[in-house]
Length: 91
Image (cartoon, rainbow, N blue to C red; front, side):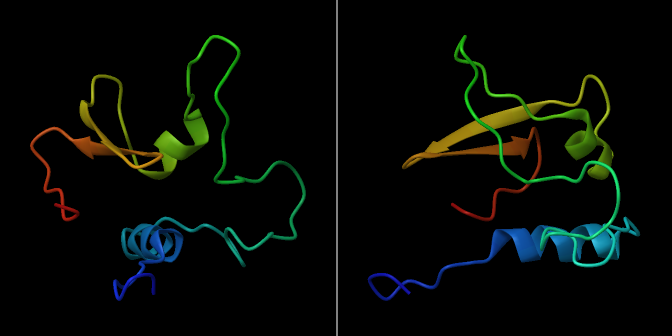
């Protein structure tokens, strides 16, 4: 808690949400899964041209389709993507 405000664990929240939707993230999920091949790191970086990319594996986990639209919400050193017409619980 910082300044008396409760801090939410968004990773755990989204993992639970995906699990409830029937998406299997595997054992350990974001906690360094021990399986062969690539695994999602839940991290990205700004590219040389200033773009910030979210890969296909993440959009597939959320069942996002080409043409899905999002509002970009800016906070203090954070970016949130909120589906157009979706609820934004942070405000």
